[in-house]
Length: 251
Image 1 (cartoon, rainbow, N blue to C red):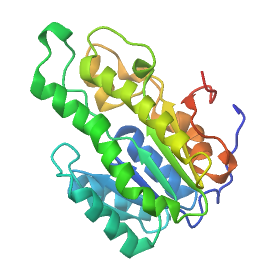
Image 2: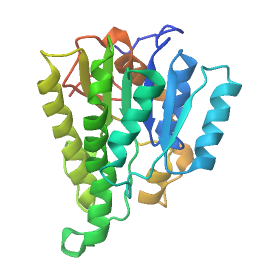
Image 3: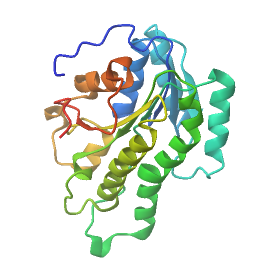
Image 4: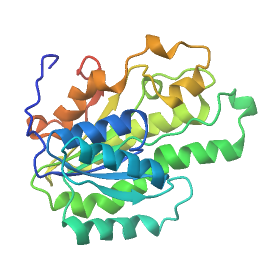
């Protein structure tokens, strides 16, 4: 899989929703999907940043994207079905869903972890992906070939001290991915997988490692092939797998 070369029209005519689409991996993934033919629905909490990515996609010649402003930390449960209904009215289906939005808040011993921070991180990193997936499943089932990708982390496969709610949320994402994959394995056209990116030049990484030189880290552009492979038709039949973004191999 390391030599995978995605066709230029890999995602032609596909409708793909990307959360956390204004920064880091989400921004690059959204632009990459669009460059391979997808109509991308950009979801994030900042309208000015959403509009910036929207403009970048159009200027690059990609299909006209769509914007959905939503704060995953504060949005009530009722907002998720409403968003799905809007997508249905606009597109009639959904061919892909990339869960990328995440937050960290702080690093702390479990002894001292703040409950408000704990709940906030779990809301954005785990509960919101659950609610969004649940709301979008009817749309995904209307697709001939749908893919759900959860952005995980190595910290969600082996625990590490001080990562608190963030680490727990990523363990939860792996569990959610596996359960959903099993529930959809034999009864639908939906495949479900997770990707653990490497240490990457993002705002979240800089917050966690303020003394680290970001220039020593890869940018998200360097490992987009795995996102394209799992989002596109070449990964048909691949489900329930936890991938490493660099090796494109499940551990």
